[in-house]
Amino acid sequence: MDMNEAMNMNKEPKEVFCDDDVPLAMAYVRFQKWGMLYDDAVGLERGTIFRQLDKPFIGEEAVCRG
Image (cartoon, rainbow, N blue to C red; front, side, top):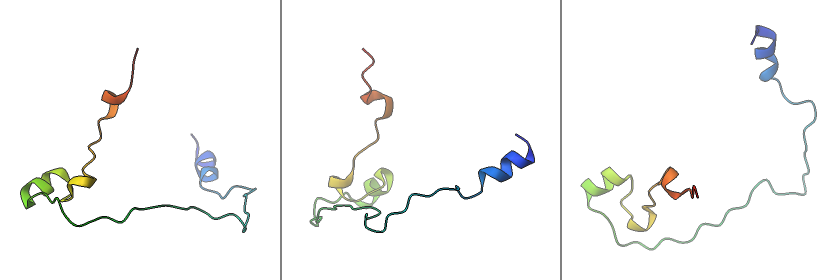
């Protein structure tokens, strides 16, 4: 890749879809009840103190290769 190609990659697109009537994004987040907490050491290891939020990434284990 030469310098001109690299510079062109950072430019804004010429045509941008913009519709002010369409919301950018919407999300729904359930209310979380306080409880079922890990102790400090386990929470630090797992990345959360909330058992309900502990959803480990299993990666390729979840892919069916049949």
